[in-house]
Length: 263
Length: 221
Image 1 (tube, rainbow over the protein chains, first blue to last red):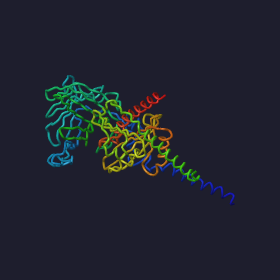
Image 2: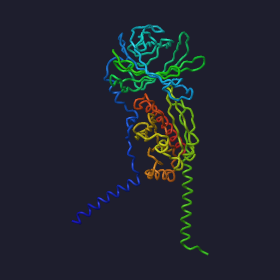
Image 3: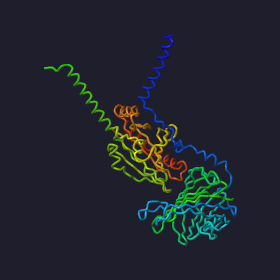
Image 4: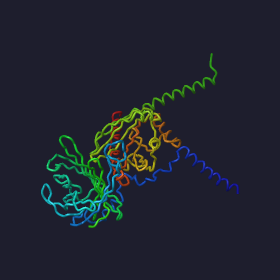
């Protein structure tokens, strides 16, 4: 019996002491190795996201042009300028008054002439419960892609030629350079810009989760020798259109997100 | 008059230890002499030199170091630093240093920096409230090899420390510690864009360091 048990015991203790020695000399690996609560934030470089594969199965135009299509957007404001009166809170205005969430209704108004010639489509926006249009956006939408052309409303901004936001076939992470003219009201300034179509990503809306392409645009105009930048990020979802926008106006960062839509 | 044998033995032992100590110090100092430059431009990213703060350098034992900010037209910034690694104190691991400022480590993963056959680095997420930082870290030897493990994190890193000592003293390794990091914007779902940005800069820096290694080995041969 002893002859049988001894080798077993020996092997057991040998294994235990060997493992302990190995741990002591090689260092215990942290429990967080290749894991952690934010594990989803780290991907192997070069791998495509799950959303990138999903978006290919989605159909429908990235900007539906059917007249009468509506999007109700929820609008949030945050102050980005240097603090005034020592108030560091970005959720209040310069007078310390909290920003209030607002809503607007965007409607596809239909064909509209482009500043440089040709035709595009115009989206009219009205503050909730009001009939007066306070902002318009005009895009050229054709087989080759979606191009930004004009912002109207209180002040107008025209891009000449229109800025290519998305060109087909879509190539994620592609960066395009644009050179042209930005016209504010009636004055023109030389400008250039970069447009980046990011990976498709999953965005959660009140009506459910959708897959959308994130498109970053950074336009810079040379105004009287000084560069003025106009960064804007838009998310385009197949069959729905622009579901989210982030841009800067004056000292405010404005975020719009689709609350409900009818295409 | 002759010294008793035990004294001679002790004296010899002390002399050998002192000589080894001097040699090791020299080799560690030599290990911290390599500080290559960072690329000026990476695609649409423009580099601006931003030296590491004096307090940081003091904490690291005042090594040779360089820091840079890479900014792109979309207003995104990726920060990179190289710290020449000589003595052990230069090797402060980010998992120890960064966590001092209210951040805690919430993810860690090893990966190949520039494709499957390239060197290994370590990606980490540090979180403080809603703020997250994505950081890549690796040790780059002048012979082109890399390693991603903590060399001075906690007591568990003893094997890695032995490796550091052996590499510097015996193999004569010269090493820089590479840190590349950026904040993850709140609208960047799962930090996808942040990681792409850090990937771009990391790959460019890795290639630049490999090139520097190849040139220096070519010059020495």
